[in-house]
Length: 377
Image (cartoon, rainbow, N blue to C red; front, side, top):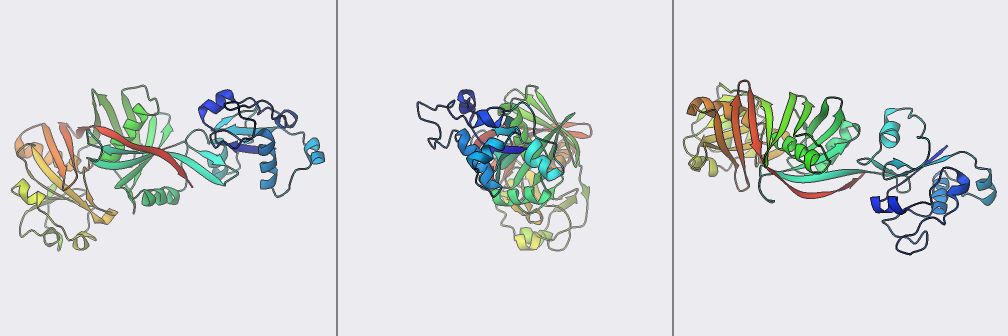
């Protein structure tokens, strides 16, 4: 049995009639026309002629087809176009996970092109916690049908060179999500979760007003609230600690209140101090915790902050949703409020709304699509 994969756009799928269920009809290439052009005219938006498909598949196996060889071929040829099988039966069961990834699980987010030996994955890039592009925090989102090897996802994140790249796969109760910086996989990322929910709701046809993600940090819920998305994350209140050696010096501060949760939380007196920081990232890298959040009361917002994470390959993040699982409970207690407005960032900034809900933090914001495309690996 032979399996041929062709990448084609939906308009060509509707017009195409040359692919059929057996070798005899597959070699009849009289069915396809594109804008009046003959079959095999070379348009990159259309599949090649049926005869070209058959010849290329045979060449890929190391033997050029002959007329006699073609006549003796009696087995069905399964042709996949844009992830859809155009024959009556599916391909044979995959013998291992790699085959399942390349064959059976290939639909619209995985497209296997045997002629060029590549796999294509859809990718979206959004600006999260922003109302227009070039603001907030950029994130890449890759919807998957099944998990590739971890090293592949890490390489994609490094190639994207964005603060986070999110990958998610559908499960029975929703989706499982994972996040990678250019350097490592992390346990929680807010802005890339917001971006992933936006992709599901606005690009992939998710009909419900809520998306549920399973993650390393437990269940995460994102709900549509008018024009914004609200994330339901676990609260991580900070506790006082002794500042580790190099922390304040790396920030250029003489003294400050220091607490910790997953990140160090450094509290200063005024937002101008936060805005004027010029950290020494070499001194901050290697500190025990994930990152460092520096925060102060704001004038237009309840609090402002900046977040530095050289330990995870992100010197500064423009809007870190996960950091607000610690920032929000700290400022809620200090200000005696349950609903808080927040701004984060240095030269590039994002805006967030936070609300305490028991042992959960509701973090809201908008996202804007910057780019969509295809990864070829």
